[in-house]
Length: 171
Image (tube, rainbow, N blue to C red; front, side, top):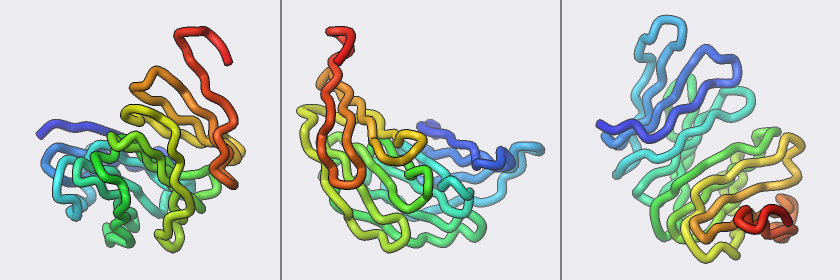
Protein backbone atom coordinates (compact mmCIF):
# COMPACT_ATOMS: atom_id res chain seq x y z
CA UNK A 1 0.00 0.00 0.00
CA UNK A 2 1.09 3.56 -0.60
CA UNK A 3 2.42 5.43 2.43
CA UNK A 4 1.14 9.01 2.50
CA UNK A 5 2.53 10.45 5.71
CA UNK A 6 5.08 9.92 8.48
CA UNK A 7 5.71 11.58 11.84
CA UNK A 8 8.24 11.02 14.63
CA UNK A 9 7.16 10.95 18.25
CA UNK A 10 8.59 13.92 20.18
CA UNK A 11 11.18 11.70 21.89
CA UNK A 12 12.23 10.18 18.56
CA UNK A 13 11.65 6.58 19.64
CA UNK A 14 8.54 5.91 17.54
CA UNK A 15 7.50 6.61 13.97
CA UNK A 16 3.88 6.75 12.82
CA UNK A 17 2.86 6.22 9.21
CA UNK A 18 -0.43 6.74 7.41
CA UNK A 19 -1.16 4.42 4.51
CA UNK A 20 -3.38 3.54 1.61
CA UNK A 21 -4.57 0.44 3.44
CA UNK A 22 -6.63 2.71 5.77
CA UNK A 23 -4.33 2.20 8.78
CA UNK A 24 -1.99 4.16 10.98
CA UNK A 25 1.08 2.11 11.87
CA UNK A 26 3.44 2.69 14.81
CA UNK A 27 7.06 1.60 14.51
CA UNK A 28 9.98 1.44 16.94
CA UNK A 29 12.70 3.57 15.37
CA UNK A 30 15.72 1.79 16.89
CA UNK A 31 14.77 -1.67 15.62
CA UNK A 32 12.17 -1.11 12.90
CA UNK A 33 9.77 -3.28 14.91
CA UNK A 34 6.06 -2.94 14.24
CA UNK A 35 4.52 -1.81 17.53
CA UNK A 36 0.87 -1.40 16.61
CA UNK A 37 -1.54 -1.03 13.72
CA UNK A 38 -4.45 1.35 14.29
CA UNK A 39 -7.61 0.67 12.32
CA UNK A 40 -10.52 3.10 12.35
CA UNK A 41 -10.51 4.99 9.06
CA UNK A 42 -12.64 3.79 6.14
CA UNK A 43 -10.27 5.16 3.49
CA UNK A 44 -6.61 6.09 2.92
CA UNK A 45 -4.78 7.88 5.76
CA UNK A 46 -3.23 11.06 4.37
CA UNK A 47 -1.69 12.73 7.41
CA UNK A 48 -0.42 11.80 10.88
CA UNK A 49 0.90 13.86 13.79
CA UNK A 50 1.95 13.17 17.39
CA UNK A 51 0.84 15.35 20.28
CA UNK A 52 3.72 17.35 21.83
CA UNK A 53 3.92 14.97 24.81
CA UNK A 54 3.76 11.89 22.56
CA UNK A 55 0.74 10.43 24.34
CA UNK A 56 -1.72 10.92 21.49
CA UNK A 57 -1.69 10.61 17.73
CA UNK A 58 -3.91 12.33 15.20
CA UNK A 59 -4.71 11.14 11.69
CA UNK A 60 -6.57 12.58 8.72
CA UNK A 61 -8.07 10.56 5.89
CA UNK A 62 -9.82 10.44 2.54
CA UNK A 63 -12.87 9.47 4.63
CA UNK A 64 -13.09 13.19 5.65
CA UNK A 65 -12.51 12.34 9.32
CA UNK A 66 -9.90 13.33 11.88
CA UNK A 67 -9.15 10.50 14.29
CA UNK A 68 -7.49 10.99 17.66
CA UNK A 69 -5.76 7.97 19.17
CA UNK A 70 -4.12 7.06 22.47
CA UNK A 71 -0.61 6.26 21.20
CA UNK A 72 0.35 3.70 23.85
CA UNK A 73 -2.74 1.50 23.57
CA UNK A 74 -4.04 2.36 20.11
CA UNK A 75 -7.46 3.23 21.54
CA UNK A 76 -9.53 5.45 19.26
CA UNK A 77 -10.47 8.42 21.47
CA UNK A 78 -12.43 10.47 18.93
CA UNK A 79 -13.41 10.29 15.29
CA UNK A 80 -14.18 13.88 14.34
CA UNK A 81 -16.51 14.69 11.48
CA UNK A 82 -17.20 18.00 9.82
CA UNK A 83 -15.01 18.21 6.75
CA UNK A 84 -16.92 17.53 3.53
CA UNK A 85 -13.95 16.09 1.64
CA UNK A 86 -10.55 14.47 2.23
CA UNK A 87 -8.52 15.69 5.21
CA UNK A 88 -5.09 16.56 3.80
CA UNK A 89 -3.17 17.77 6.85
CA UNK A 90 -3.37 17.58 10.64
CA UNK A 91 -1.33 19.31 13.36
CA UNK A 92 -1.36 19.65 17.14
CA UNK A 93 -0.90 23.00 18.85
CA UNK A 94 2.36 23.23 20.85
CA UNK A 95 0.51 22.80 24.16
CA UNK A 96 -1.40 19.78 22.82
CA UNK A 97 -4.74 21.41 23.60
CA UNK A 98 -5.90 21.93 20.02
CA UNK A 99 -5.81 20.18 16.67
CA UNK A 100 -5.94 21.78 13.25
CA UNK A 101 -7.08 20.01 10.10
CA UNK A 102 -7.04 21.14 6.48
CA UNK A 103 -9.12 19.64 3.70
CA UNK A 104 -9.97 19.37 0.04
CA UNK A 105 -13.15 21.23 1.03
CA UNK A 106 -10.99 24.44 1.25
CA UNK A 107 -11.56 24.84 5.00
CA UNK A 108 -9.49 24.56 8.15
CA UNK A 109 -11.04 23.30 11.36
CA UNK A 110 -9.73 23.81 14.87
CA UNK A 111 -10.71 21.12 17.37
CA UNK A 112 -10.38 20.80 21.14
CA UNK A 113 -7.96 17.89 21.52
CA UNK A 114 -9.30 17.00 24.97
CA UNK A 115 -13.05 16.92 24.22
CA UNK A 116 -13.12 16.51 20.43
CA UNK A 117 -15.38 19.55 20.11
CA UNK A 118 -15.09 21.82 17.09
CA UNK A 119 -13.64 25.13 18.29
CA UNK A 120 -13.88 27.06 15.03
CA UNK A 121 -14.14 26.81 11.28
CA UNK A 122 -11.63 28.89 9.31
CA UNK A 123 -12.94 29.73 5.86
CA UNK A 124 -11.17 31.94 3.34
CA UNK A 125 -9.19 29.72 1.01
CA UNK A 126 -10.79 29.21 -2.40
CA UNK A 127 -9.16 25.87 -3.11
CA UNK A 128 -7.69 22.78 -1.40
CA UNK A 129 -5.88 23.37 1.90
CA UNK A 130 -2.68 21.30 1.64
CA UNK A 131 -0.93 22.07 4.92
CA UNK A 132 -1.67 23.36 8.42
CA UNK A 133 0.92 24.27 11.06
CA UNK A 134 0.99 26.11 14.37
CA UNK A 135 3.57 28.72 15.33
CA UNK A 136 5.94 27.66 18.14
CA UNK A 137 3.99 29.82 20.62
CA UNK A 138 0.69 28.34 19.41
CA UNK A 139 -0.93 31.73 18.89
CA UNK A 140 -0.86 31.57 15.08
CA UNK A 141 -1.87 29.00 12.53
CA UNK A 142 -0.44 29.05 9.00
CA UNK A 143 -2.20 27.33 6.11
CA UNK A 144 -1.11 26.65 2.54
CA UNK A 145 -3.55 26.21 -0.33
CA UNK A 146 -3.86 25.36 -3.99
CA UNK A 147 -5.36 28.86 -4.36
CA UNK A 148 -1.75 30.11 -4.40
CA UNK A 149 -1.82 31.66 -0.93
CA UNK A 150 -0.59 31.18 2.58
CA UNK A 151 -2.86 32.49 5.31
CA UNK A 152 -2.01 33.43 8.87
CA UNK A 153 -4.82 32.98 11.38
CA UNK A 154 -5.06 33.93 15.05
CA UNK A 155 -5.77 30.67 16.85
CA UNK A 156 -7.67 32.31 19.71
CA UNK A 157 -10.52 33.65 17.58
CA UNK A 158 -9.91 32.43 14.02
CA UNK A 159 -9.27 35.90 12.60
CA UNK A 160 -7.34 35.90 9.31
CA UNK A 161 -4.40 38.22 9.97
CA UNK A 162 -2.64 38.00 6.62
CA UNK A 163 -2.95 36.58 3.13
CA UNK A 164 0.47 35.90 1.66
CA UNK A 165 0.85 35.42 -2.08
CA UNK A 166 4.30 33.84 -2.62
CA UNK A 167 4.13 34.66 -6.35
CA UNK A 168 4.11 38.34 -5.33
CA UNK A 169 7.03 37.77 -2.91
CA UNK A 170 5.84 39.19 0.34
CA UNK A 171 2.86 40.30 2.32
